[in-house]
Length: 486
Image (cartoon, rainbow, N blue to C red; front, side):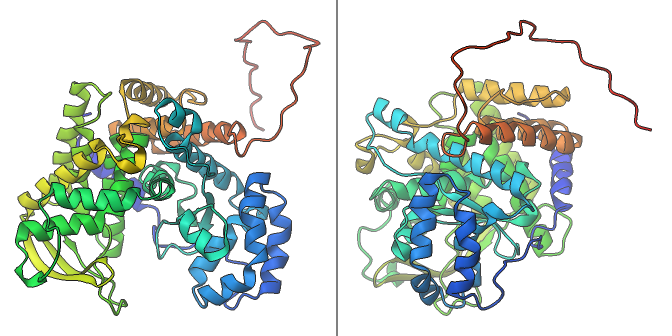
């Protein structure tokens, strides 16, 4: 698609109407000092509402180990809310339809990479796992995040992750496109044991990084850039998994979402992507932000998109041009990337970086990192690339375009595609006509309701009748005229 600057800015203004760092009810039901007894009281009835696989695989181990969980998490109320909210929010009426839609999206994106059927057909290692649970964080201060399944397993023995989204996002499913980074990224990557270390070493080698670090002061600029992508790999790979799941429009959505986050943080009204990466001022270790610098993520995504094996060249060229245009819209006049923070590469391997790098060099490295993630064959995947199990192809693109056309015509999109295609189609429609934001959201909600109802993990049992007593033969019965409201 040819990105239109004015329409992108209009989409940005739609997102700016949301208080992205705000709060939404209900607050956590345990106060500032949760106790084991208090948590058991709210978890026990809610656990009965979970499908058995989540009840036995997550809720029961959590309840059994609550004393240890509280002891280890201490005063970290955000993590306590996320871990327990994945269960107790099942019993809350506020936000229940939205939670179900979000759960359906997580399940769909997760299964696309970890489906046993797909992995068997592609000769991939089989990973016996289940999708993460979802929850809505009362306060939006920390933005969206995931607690991967391996972290949960270390904490209380459940091999199920949790995806947390600020409650203020729950009525805006279009924003969930960029969150495929969380829902179909981190947890999926960590499910394949040894994949992340292999990716990190591979990108360091591909970008000309050092095999060993004897003196950080003697590293060349090229070597430091390679080490940055080694350090950023977990987040970078999650972006590329997002592209494979929901297509190139993942990049468009990320640009508008992060532009709005930056604008609200800076109390501005102009879309902008940051050209600097620093560290949390409250972090005594001064560790560099583990996410690639905002602007570089567009080049990272462009690198992956240009290697999509099943997408037509014309589509690839159009999207690639878009990412270059988005960089100009969101960072006009940028010439450098500023980095300040400690890069932790392993035990005893800490490289302090405080320097400015030419933008062109950093974008080139980001592009090559995206290509590497999308095309490299990994031992952890039995010698396969990630695209051999999931990629965005012509059929996905055609389906998304059809969904966008239906939304443009104010027609329902229920059943027209899977969750990833629905999200992509909604973004295509809104980028073409930002006035479609409200109706597109309405149609998307209806389609995700059906997705939840038919999800293999979340759907309820349905009777399988041996005989239909009555048969209907008219697929298009006449619509009854609606009565005018008095």
